[in-house]
Image 1 (cartoon, rainbow, N blue to C red):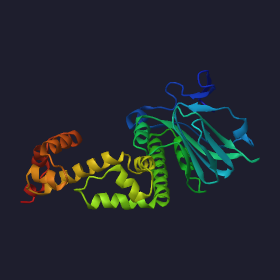
Image 2 (image 1 turned 90 degrees about the vertical axis):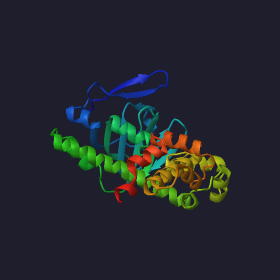
Image 3 (image 1 turned 90 degrees about the horizontal axis):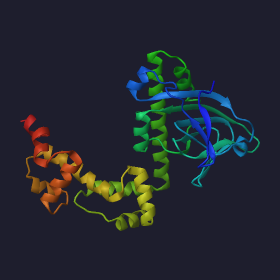
Image 4 (image 1 turned 135 degrees about the vertical axis):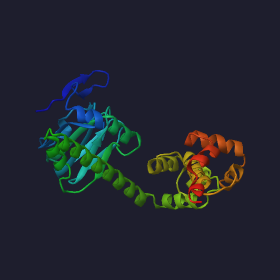
Length: 291
């Protein structure tokens, strides 16, 4: 039985699929930080995409269409064809509709879930809205079967299997992006190989044959950071490793990674690692431990 409440949001003129308080959550879910509120296998009516109102969920949804033909439409204007083997992922609050098209049904395995673990996966980019190639094997079915068993072990296994699938979708998405923008991988390699260099966004964009706006969008999707922030953090992480492995001065470390002002380097180092360079080396020096 569907435990979700469907209401109308007059402001957005769409249906709201709400979560009743405590729906599907037990003590193990509270401790784990992730719980599956609903899961099912089923089929929509033919051409359900055209008959369905716009809606949004108060939870995360992953729907694996293993038969039929479908479409996902986001109110932002993005539209995606859904083929057998594709997985539709929708985050909370995203106004959308998806369903069967071309005289066919949307035959799916679907899992709805929520919790702070899911929120962190979304914040880090692992969970994102869209349609992602998966395969025809019904990978969500074991999650559905385990979620139906109330035992603690089954609930934990359902959560773990779901997280593995979400990570796999994320990695598949990254791999597809690498094929679409192969020069970005070369840029990342060049940045790593020359830790002294300060790249401008213009230089990065020219190397990748992209506009600066395109470069920022693709770079953020690929790394999770804006280009300049990525360069800065990479330098600081490499500097932290260098300080822990050597006995060089903080000024020498700053110069090695392209920081002309050691005081600025120290401030940035503390902002990122939470402690000054000297303190970091005192705590994590590999050189002293191996002496």
